[in-house]
Figure (cartoon, rainbow, N blue to C red):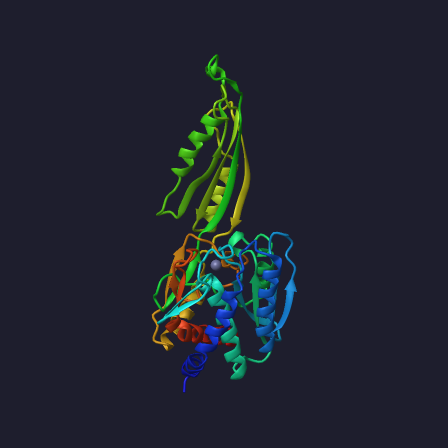
Length: 389
Ligand SMILES: [Zn+2]
């Protein structure tokens, strides 16, 4: 019997266990800035099930009081390791999703089933299978870092991912794939920059002498149109204005100052650097208005064209074939913690979690239960392929 078949049989036999563990996880709601006790309960739940199968679990304190602590879980010994990337926070405030668990036919709905408690529970099943069947190579490790603040940008956790990724042969990001296709993956993600431009000109009475104003408002309005015009979908750049503040409604004053914030996305590191420079040296339309730039690149691009990530994708296609799956990777403009693991040169593959749809949509987010076994068996084979390499 092939390893793929052995793993597939195991996963099919354990699909109900997967659903039970996932149900337990989903019933414990975990909004990003949720109640600390709730978040702790969730971590305890995960630490318990992972220690039961032999993981060493440690709590990594968050350096930001808004978020919960993180969980580092390790199985095995040695210098070579595969890193699993997961988060336990969800975008839903408590109660916002409605019914917490609904299972009908081959679909399960619940807050975070797809993004990404389903993917997190896959790691549990994958590790359990490899352990119980004695397949994990000697002196190799599986490391799973579960953070608490991904939906808010991973400000208190991205450094841990970077450090762990530097030591790992590959990073497997257990975020969901997109849609119902069984062989879906994510093989690249745009980087994200967040910039605020602060204008400083000269105010003037808006009735008596508007011609003498150096208007911050007008300057930023012109910049907003110019900056959004930099969007080039073919090139792989988008710029969207997200906030513009200037002046006081009803006051007879042309405002001298104001702030404009943009969200910019880039497909490659080169592009990110090029536009970062442009934003940091933004030239005013009115030379008498001074513009200073705050912010910068928050998430570096996870570039699909990097040969390290490509090689992992090629491996995934080969392994997918063993299961009769035609693996297809997509590139998305939304970021994940895969952006951080990729940024330190760790071969990264994303979208290894569950299939399904409607992430971040209350009442609608679901996974396909008929893909649990095959997608978990596939991930287990990928772990072996990387660690035996
Ligand atoms: Zn997610």
